[in-house]
Length: 471
Image 1 (cartoon, one colour):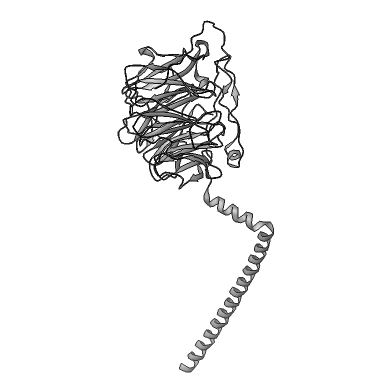
Image 2: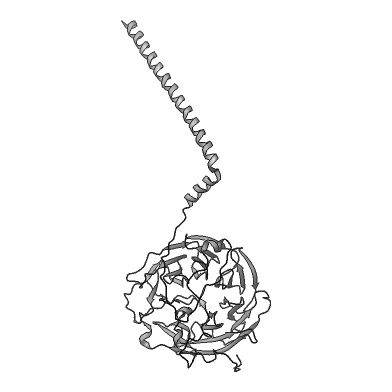
């Protein structure tokens, strides 16, 4: 267990508070699928929740202000033919969300400005490439329209959503089910946790593993791995004695962890949520009724226990609001959306301060909604750091442009490729050849016609001779 050593930190007194009942989202049938994803995704406009659906998979998308009891007839996003396993909002467009499902597909949806008024069953694009269920979906942090999906076929695909193409397929890197996948701060690397107990650091564009640690956690239950903003990797998992652990790793020296902490003997998978601006990690165990939070620093023991928020009800899943969706006037540094069996309850984390002024030490510039580079640039090898915004005057959402997908037609590509290869000189030569052939054919037809007419004349002559003989 952690030693409760008192150390100076501005986050030592962070306290969590559940909102009043009328600010919860009630009467929601939260999905019962046995899959360890968070089942909830939030952004400054909407909260999305995976729900139970008969004859397929569906999720709810509610405007944040749509609290209270949710009508059973409230429209859903319902295009999947199997249960939805994971959802993720696009960081560069608050109206675009991607979903992965047991039906082996990934779908990308455009949500109307003010939310749904009818069921949405037509995605903007369907991404097909996995042969088994798709359990992990995560958008690139800085490049527009780049999406990563991981399936139970042990395959990671990186898509260009703008063209509907699978650009990179990372095969034969994972011998077993992938438990988690996470981009680093600028999206140049990914780290994965796999059922074979190995943490891998992958350069997706070179399609190679550049670092790995076998038996990062020796227990058989699922692990999670996330990148921190300094490039280190934070993992949660289980020891051989089934104790929950957290660990910190330096990707350049994966032999030994920077630090490992034993937590408790509960068996719920720990979902880590990380705030790169404050270096605070929040751990939400599936089936737990608490959220623990830790500050990560450069001094031993590196991962410092801060406090925990406890409630009576266990959590089925958890959504985490990006920084730009928080209320800076109330010194809110995190907001969670906790899923119960029948409702979603916001939990607000606050740093107590006496002053009403903007607290710039709590709110350094944070990642805004603008993308640093386009998908094509990233696939060509360029990287872009997150474009930061100030929250001093609060976040004002801009107008989101609609997601447009221009699918590349394979046939057109082949034709254009052949034209490119042949070039204008060859085209000219081939057209001259064609004209010569045509002339030859015309000549042959003319000579055949002449032959036929001369044969006809000969027949007439023979017939005349026969008639004379018979007379």
